[in-house]
Amino acid sequence: MGTGLAAAGFVLAVTFGAFARTEGWGVLAPIVCSLVVFSGSAQFALATALAGGGGVPTAVAAAALINGRFLPMGVAVAKDLRGGRIRRALEGQAVVDGSWVAAHLGGGRFDRYKLFGATVVQWPAWVAGTALGVVVAPPENLVESLGLDLVFPAFFLLLLLDELRGSRAARGAAALGACLAAALVVWVPVGLALLGASAAALLGLRKGLIPRDTRRDTKRDTKEAS
Amino acid sequence: MVNQAHLWWAIICVALISFAFKAVGPAVLADRQLPAAARGVIALLAPVLLAGLLVVDMGGPRWTALNGPLLIGLATVAAVRLSRAPMLLAILAGTTVTALIRLVWG
Image (cartoon, rainbow over all chains, first blue to last red; front, top):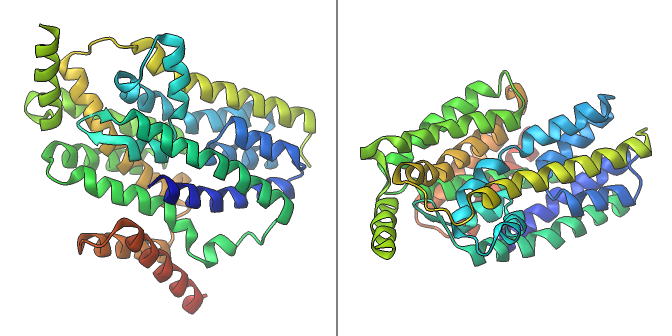
């Protein structure tokens, strides 16, 4: 899974590198950006906003709104990370879309090592792809011509199908989340729409809808605590 | 052309904000035992965010990125996967169909 995500990320990163180069970012800035930001959607938002003459505050706000999804994602993995607050904050940096979904075990639990493993593979691929894009600058439509822009949504779909299998609560919440995202994206930036869509998870407050895996965890944790 | 000083400031700001977003949840919650209701919410975050990611990825801002060949490719991925094929095969089928449709329809 990590390798597949890394391959998809590599291709996307090549397009980012090429796009940034054509927008006058030079050679070093796109590579450093991929190294320290490591978020395709935020980087594209940043580059697009700067290219549109929106200024630094607008560009930073656009990227920040898109990365707002890392807040609920970080909350979700918090329980499965280790150590004190600082170490957990550092371990939380492994959260990126692909790794987060690949590490999800179901019922709100995450495989910490899978999270790290998937990120460790994707990060260098993302930076290397950017570097290649900066140097080679392939035509913008190459990714689309090869149908490679399908790879990320396809991964999300496949993982969603797995999540929905056998959980009525997950199906209801996912349907509501999709509807909220679909409506919100008309009015607000993509990142904010995703944050708003995460409100659908509040369905988990309804007693009868708590997924089976979580009820099992609750019983186990109660036993351990006692 | 982008002003280089502005560009570097923007990159630094976005990197710091992203770091903070990823750090807040794990640092604040630490190993605190959450009530069952909160766990129920967290358990549903994955399917909800996946569904949301899928929708915004396909639709884009204000639904401007909606793309016919991409939708057909995605339907192919779902159909192949539901016929119990491996994930990578499903994705390969989807990308091939998407590329072929674009090649034929221009």
